[in-house]
Length: 88
Image (cartoon, rainbow, N blue to C red):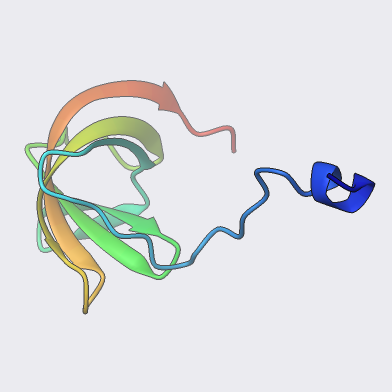
């Protein structure tokens, strides 16, 4: 293995449109609300979060992905718990 290969071992690019499977538990930052539901924007994707507390905006939360549309990069999830606040 060359030095170049060693240097870049495990290196990959992060996509702006990640894909999830129903049942995945992910940590996201709640960026706003839409239609009364909390919303997390992950790159160019959007996840609508049901059952989130009213003060969830600008907090990090755990969400269980319920539905995910790979083509539209949109989905819904269910709030599980708040794990942190924004650093801003």
